[in-house]
Image 1: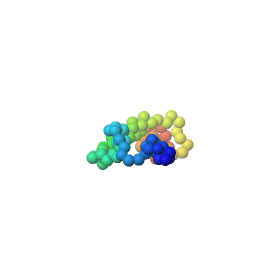
Image 2: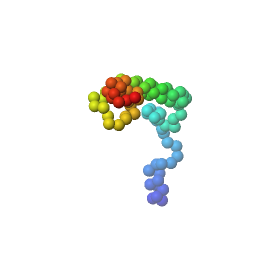
Image 3: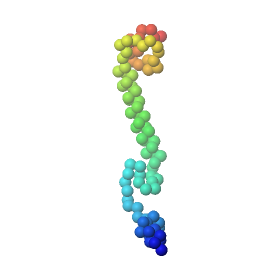
Amino acid sequence: QEHIEKVNTMGGGGWYYVPKVWSPAGGWWVNPKYWQRNTGVAFAVIGVLVANLVKISSEKERRPIAPYKHIPSQRWCKHAKEDDPSLP
């Protein structure tokens, strides 16, 4: 008898109330209507930001001392020929 009373007072069974919840992940049982479009837009925005970051980085990259071995970023660096005359 005592065991049954403890179960009833502790809860954990039957119907439960779920309030309307907002969260960045979408809340309870999320399945947004346009999730594929939203994901595509997010990837496109990230892609544009990364492309601009790479462009700015390659324009500003300078090497006052020529490296002793080839560095991959020298392929697309704007000033690579000036900074390392040994490049082909």
